[in-house]
Length: 421
Image 1 (cartoon, rainbow, N blue to C red):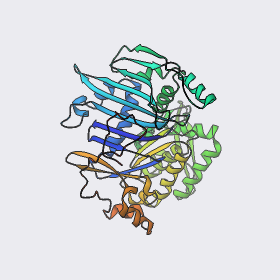
Image 2 (cartoon, rainbow, N blue to C red; image 1 turned 180 degrees about the vertical axis):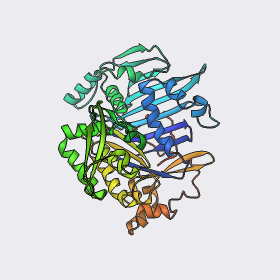
Image 3 (cartoon, one colour; image 1 turned 120 degrees about the vertical axis):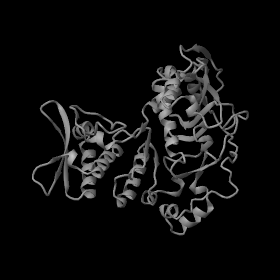
């Protein structure tokens, strides 16, 4: 499942913003304070809202007044367009409002676009804990598979949740008969928004194994153990890449201690005995953790990493960019924010979005939409060089709130958001 569009309204710096036609790998650049972290926080917010509820997710961010865009009363709106497993376009829209000191779901819609012309089918439609869902979704799908068209009448059922801050997809997504809701819920649950912390990665951990690297990286030794035991070939690839990038390094292992903990040990060909991870440089630990993450046998449906260049040698950036792209090719959509020209030099122009903050709010722009940038890249310039030279500029006529081009896949009565990308 790939996200094709992200639309955000009244979420901190994003009063109205949209990213369209998203590729498998998206690289976000912008000055400090332009909204890169806020964009990634939208992913974290949805994951928190699903795991707990909307009120808890808002409270973790300081409350509704702190989260809603300055000068706005709401609602906060987040919309994702994505391709479900059958290949059709689906839209999820979430509106959040403040009522009696709590944040509630003002509207939650999951709809499936049958084609470019017909009205989308509202699979889930809820407001303030009450709503309905189509219960014959499988019949629709079977009829289309057999007859090539869908003339089945919608069968809907009314539902009521106990809490107006709970997402409907949290409950309905547990049942396979609500296929798209179930797929969407699973996709969000398995997003990986990295908050890698080197100090945590150095710590010993309980013996055992873990299939995936955690958000903060504290289970890196458990991931090593898992990959060594169950995916030896892939683990050997990680070691080979480490040998090429860290001079002298020959081996890495997860060693069990007598008290049942796992510690990372690194072997350098200069020394007879291996040494513990606390004696290894920050860059070595971080590169090793990133390689484990990017060579995960089962990629996350979405991977978001902020500023991967920190603590890493600049000459390694273009290789790292290609490894992020390879991860995306294997099935995980990638979002990376960066300040590194070296990283951008390994990125394609159509993969780059840049953020501009004006008058307190952020607009989003796609590098490939700039004729100037396209011409310079075609002439042989690299994107990182152009970024470093300050050539990522917003046209003087742009006010950061350009209208959105019409989208024929949307219902005519739906509002059009801006700015267009």
